[in-house]
Image (cartoon, rainbow, N blue to C red; front, side, top):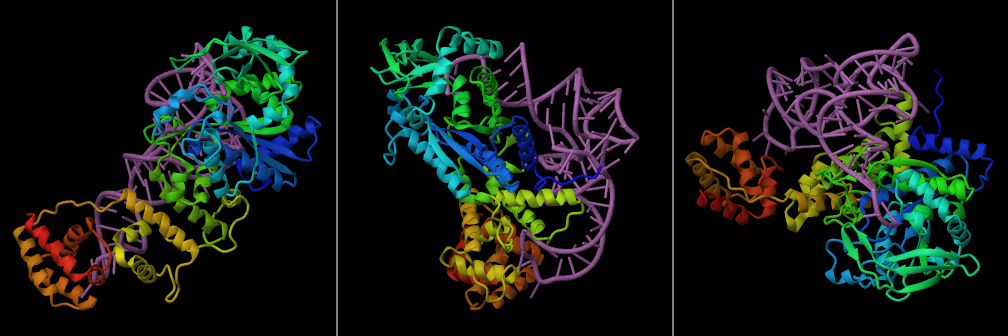
Length: 534
RNA sequence: GGGCCCGUAGCUCAGCAAGGCAGAGCAUCGGACUUUUAAUCCGAGGGUCACGGGUUCAAUUCCCGCCGGGCCCGCCA
């Protein structure tokens, strides 16, 4: 009954404790507990890839909070072959299908290779979130030979590997083919080769470049028959085996994974244990992120929801909140959810700083912990100013282009979010930036046609002639009321009408000052147009 | 064929990996205030937590089953 709260009370703390217990039972060295994430480099990284990192890093943080050293290894799968040209990239890349992504030129011309371009996009987003990692890449690993011992063991036990694969997923392939893909020395492709013999004396694998069918599409091989030295870096293990090799060689103790590779992980666990004699790392399986249409967010499909897109509208912490608040469960996510996560982070911040009370201690600790994880354990010392996202987006939309900052400053002071003489700090500017992007892209003022009655038209005509005489805000404000009343229109209704014409919404900022900032003549023109259009 | 997730207020969902109060936002309705300002403030209604069993002093939460919706894998990675 008496429940002691573990760490910060989150799932990550519990998992970390479980890992420690397991490692202690296994009697393994705890001086540096490594977690790992794999990062794909064959397409634009989507937010799900960042989720993998966020969750593994949260475990690393939790382990550190418990007093252990821990390190996140970001392992870049840059020897994977290109299977499909991602949407939005030139068709000319088709000629590189089957090539390791690290040997394909960067179509953007800014990195050493296609693979490096893609993986750097994800690494940049990790930096943005202040996720610390030790970067490694497959090409580097195979070249420097850190996996050689494991590769040898796996190839020498290829028959057993084949049996495990068959037992787990009923796939026959590796009963005959070695779980190793040489890069064809003649055509440069990797998945087209079939490795059939390993000579432990020379470390050489014999292969035939016979081609491979992927998703119904055949990638042609060149029929070259050759040999490759496994220590040369000119080939790689199949995923069914490579994880295990990595885990052992790098001494990995935790790796989270998406359910799409659950089978591979299960197979690798067995290979790791039964063939490499190494207890596989602890695991946690998470669900895929779905886009709002319910389809898996895929690296090669169009309209990829990338971390970079998120950062346009929301903070890194809000993205981490999305990733960390729940571990299980399929998540549907779209750009439209960003404001909600921004607001939720503000609520968490209120809880963290005790501004908002939570009755249950367990609940309180968990939410405080979640907040700290979102800030990768470096939360701000003082709470920020919490301007609701929607309000900012709304104000940003309403603001006259020429004097946006003045307008926002005044409104935020009026609404008491800012003190009388307070000016924007970097935090508020950031929020304004997010909200402005939002309103520009998703809430554009529509040129909706407003239907006017004869009476409306008359009132507006009256307003036009009065406006031309007005010079100050209060006078304009009063004039609007007077005209509404003199035309037998309820002020509320009349205001709503004017907002519709001028802003395309039913409400907005105090009209007097707004009309002045917009420019009297502009307003008059706009009103005239609305009458003419009816 | 194998596996996973979801089902909670009219809507969107939180709560479930640590069993102990049925929750939030929006919407609806009522009231107050109003020279409009994501108007604001106060209040109300709304639930078989999909369904059936089990464990338990106690189950939305854990276990088994079942129905419905969705996803992943079954090439490669």
